Image (cartoon, rainbow, N blue to C red; front, top):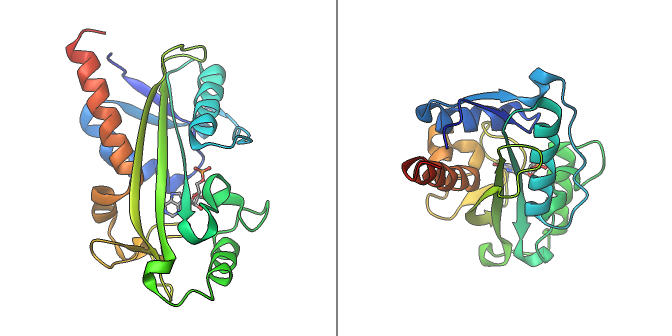
Length: 205
Ligand code: IMP
């Protein structure tokens, strides 16, 4: 399947930059939905998959173009998977990273050991060729680590200053974009999606 142009169903500039790096080598132009005046879609569902699918269909419907959506979040074991699909709005509708992090750290304050603070980011990507596409492409990725004891670094976004990568011990915010793109949930999901696109292309779909 040759896709020259994709709408990204997200208003998040930082996500756009992460995606662009990974998708540009395929010769696919990525345009944010804001460039078409598409407002953010509601995310009322219980799963990342359903939210991502709803966002992708919404962007495809309003632009007439193939659309790529991601739904992602931080899942903390000790909190039964919260903030999960509510990651963006964990501390309320103001969607503030600072408030979300404050609430998260308060919820984990009684946990003194790294092992008790295990967490992972999850990303689900959905690509639809049209709003009614009966065969959306779906790819998932996870990034494992724990919620640290202090904020470190100034890069990334969201929970990154507190999320400590299991392999390197660096927080997401201490990593360069290139480093984050080799280990992150979104980059893993995107690499899987790119592999699927290449496979479809090879099959002449
Ligand atoms: P979404 O835009 O509905 O997928 O919301 C994702 C939310 O999950 C963001 O607002 C962040 O709070 C959190 N999140 C997802 N991916 C990341 C990441 O790579 N770093 C930090 N926070 C993330």
